[in-house]
Length: 116
Image 1 (cartoon, rainbow, N blue to C red):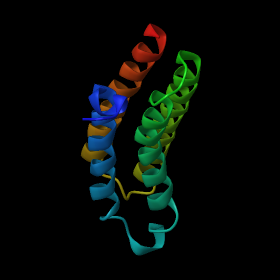
Image 2 (image 1 turned 180 degrees about the horizontal axis):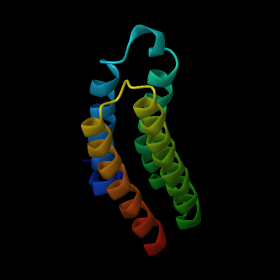
Image 3 (image 1 turned 90 degrees about the vertical axis):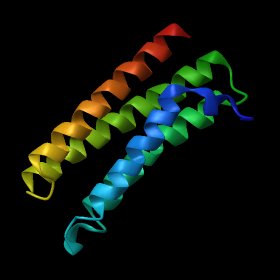
Image 4 (image 1 turned 60 degrees about the vertical axis):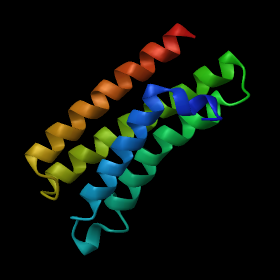
């Protein structure tokens, strides 16, 4: 693999979780396709994209800044999960699974950011 981010476990996990979010939003009702569905997918994708952007050819300070953006995007996904659960379009089991996965990812992102 040729780019630094490709070796990062947090990037790989964020890609996997973004794929899970994509699978989930395919079950959303049509009235949510351009509202919550697009918001949660953009936030999930943003986690991986910011890790990649910050890791390549940047200073440590710049990488930490982009990891902060990734963390915020992960928090946005969690907030979208709550909205979907309240609107009864995300089941309790899907909510818990993704919530726990994003909590784990955010903890790992914080640890990486703090280690730099």
